[in-house]
Image 1 (cartoon, rainbow, N blue to C red):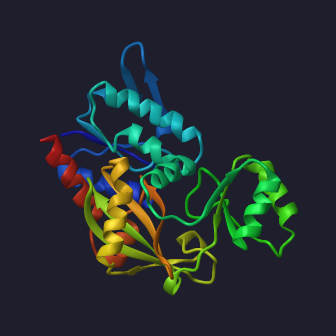
Image 2: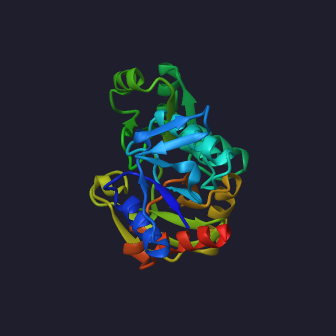
Length: 289
């Protein structure tokens, strides 16, 4: 069985997934999407001499090292491959639905999922109104991960000038009320093909957020059934084969930050001792066979 991994060469989770597939099948191909050539006329998709159309399946770990609208174009290439008969896990059309933070948030709100109060605007005055209402707000780029590009703005700061500078880079502003996290941590609730796997915690370490890029660290966590069922409901509309739901526990109850199609394996392994990459590959191979 020939299963290719779409990922980032040198990336911890991408390399681990490629190694896991190699151990299970004897075949290893880690595909960097920036090196791919799609030949629509001949229904071929080439990566370093390999026609991806000849593979038994693809598993998408990452389509780029950095989140950006460019990733949508790469996912369209994978959609072409998928629609021409090569199973892709997760379905690229479903990944597209979570890649943009606003698209993901819209789907979650329409499904009745509790989230932090959120404002979307291109207008600086309206953004300032949101900061005044929220007291402290987090501005988040529509395409980002690990807190990159996010800033915290307080109504007591020179908010207008800060927002004006931010709007020069991010025209559409996604603004969320800053919330208090219980025990200074949020949770990653993990699912494989809709089935609950495990939960781990991302803990603060001297920063306003919990990302490892800001010094945060992973820890074991046993969630309540309320948290598991909320995360299950949140991931359901997207129907991803592997996903991590970011959940925060607040004094008012649990809320969801986002649903991710590119959740990593490292936190699961370090905090829970579970090889999620192997379990994911096993699930894919079972479905293919």
